[in-house]
Length: 231
Image (cartoon, rainbow, N blue to C red; front, side, top):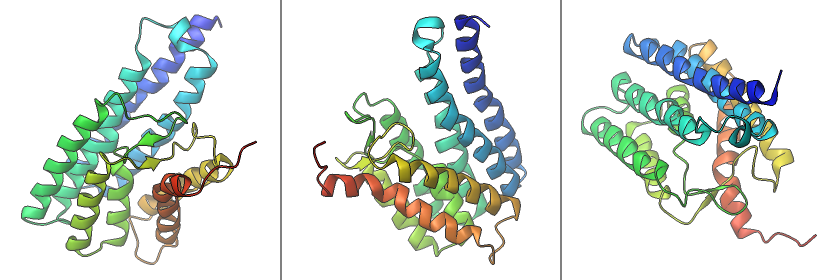
């Protein structure tokens, strides 16, 4: 294949995320939460591999007629924000006014964050919580905490989107990547496992989700607190 065809193929791979988003939404409308999250996990996996492929095949040069960054952001908003917020509201895990608060805060704050040109740091991490609500909502489905706990988590993370806190990118943040990348893959595995068993309360996947989520949320802040040694 020519470089152009290879680069276009990466864009097509990225665009499949929109299809997976639609399949997840259809499952969510029918309250098939396990199936919804399985499609979101597939979309999450595609989102994890299309970036490295895009850089490898230099899509900005070889398929410049398509804006891969814009395409990625559109799909990320659907799969990371919109569908998880809908699921959180319709599932009843955040009932009454807390559910309305959650969907308004999540969708509004994320729209502003995704449009913020300062969302990336010099080391390719994220400045502020990167709107990965799919990860939080999946953990809430798995653990089913008290709705006050869920409300606190949504509020804190929404505020964290606009604070000078660093959150690692599993692939692009070089520091601690040998730990971060395997744990991100582990999170994907545990997420798929939890959804596959329909969030069975005795599943070990729940503990895996908690451990990997705590690391992925806290690693960037830990890097800010721990000075990096000069090479």
